[in-house]
Image 1: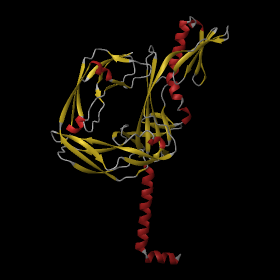
Image 2: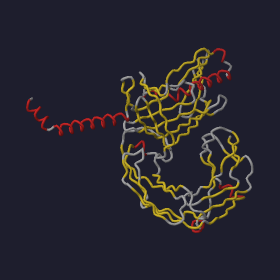
Image 3: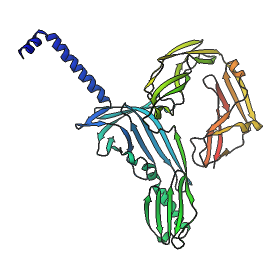
Image 4: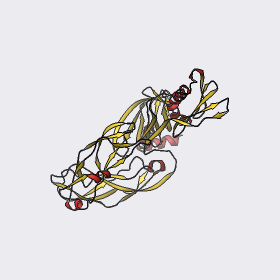
Length: 424
């Protein structure tokens, strides 16, 4: 003991240095762990797996979060678009990648553009509390029982299943004999109406019914009350597999060139990037976006761009890339579609079970395309299209006309810019 005290006395500076180093290490460790965990009333909160919003069974909207231990996450926004008298039910699932940070009894979620995954579009901070069943975010309860994830959609449709059975009972004149409505198994419900039992079935295609007659001991032919239309943007299905994926590079210019100039070509030094990450994150990634600021550019220029690791990946094989942007004087080419050429207009993303047609005759379409003389000379035909992904119910809508063209080297105008479409 005496020798130890003597060592401390003779090496006071060294002892102080070691003590300070230990304090720094402790601070770093505590600070790092605090990013993905927080303490609420002396209870540590760590997020892992699914957390889904606890809502009423007839709610039309629900949020589901999936949190990884590495501070990344994704948000699934589930919506049901429906009307009682409509024959279709629309399920709209939207996914967004995110990152999160836990600190001081709060949860901050950073949401990214779902097309590019590296453009921050929203930041929200919530008060977070731990509950017996999961967590609360600003007093909204989120449960983390994975087994109930598959029940969410069926709960959406339960009331429509009963409404289907009620309409069938009324149509067959047995509604006054109906007594009990019960769930017999996943997706199957029985409505007891005297000698007839109306069974409804919820499946991937919709809500159907058949009728069991106890006198004959037979089921009548199956029919649908509702058809289900599904829309999902780059669906995310979780897996633990880590893969390496080669992803094409996509150069995205931003800003406006100096007046009178347009981009002739964009030539990156590489045309693909090798990315390592979870398979479920990478499987929906179609390209690796690289942004080039060409604002006020008036001559050819080579850009050196540092690459940042996107949130969906663990690592990428490049630190930087060279992008050579060549520009020339702007020219304009005019194209007119009329007669049989108008049938070349493509209709994209029509919901299953719906049909689309022009509500008013279209006599001609005038198109002006801007680009370099060389690029304009390469245009032999143009593809005009309308996108109906936002229209999931019958009706008449005014929809944008678009030109299917590389907008990094061309710009264009279309007249008329909109057309009236009838959806039935």
